[in-house]
Length: 333
Image 1 (cartoon, rainbow, N blue to C red):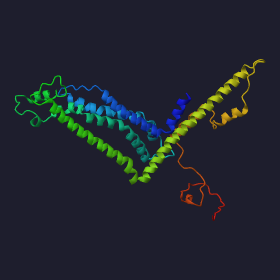
Image 2 (tube, rainbow, N blue to C red):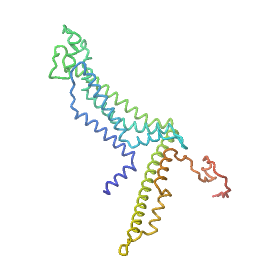
Image 3 (tube, rainbow, N blue to C red):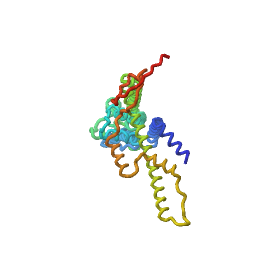
Image 4 (cartoon, rainbow, N blue to C red):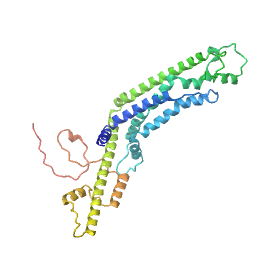
């Protein structure tokens, strides 16, 4: 049990690395799912395009949504977006940074699926087999077929068992033609995704360094503040439960006290230590009010602190605090 607790604490402290690992696992899983998928083209003119495009785009959409679901920061983003303003203004740049960070990770698995699907070419062959140029690749002397009958024959190209248009166009020629186009599109997609990732990860901080650092800092602050608040609530609930149980047993001890049954009393120092951890919140009504106030009106991001007048700290903007007299000593060293 201790090993699992250590692993969980490590994952919490290295959440970014953990989420990158999850995205990598989802990317590998998407490739394995495609390999294990039993692809069966309907070989019907009315359904080939819908089936092929569905295989190409529906699973990436599911994987994209799963990438958001498995990200722990989704609830934090929704909470920060929907919370009342109160004394703390909401920064749209921070929300955009958080959303873009999650979207970048969530897009890895869908991009792998689309790339593998296009490079394999089966769904592309199924979707566009009725668009093979007969005048270039087929038999021009083969006449006597209506357009509807020709589309029905071309729709059978992915199905070797029922294909009956060998005289019209060789099945191997049509499949090679469509697969070549699919692989060209696939490699182009891989190149575009690689360039886009390079631009987002490398060049964006160079042009908007100050805004990037500000958004990154406050997104980390929101994450850390939420974790610390949850930890403080957990510690408070633990101390609250301990004090409540101690008071219950002490009350029962007084009610059932008899000459032969005396329970050892709790040391006053230990009981006082648990009450100190409650931070003055001693009843359910006060705790509910505190939680409601935390949601409706979080404290402003302005800490009143004394700033040294000498050195670089003099450039910091001071908050409005009551004026006090100071004796300043300057060192000549």
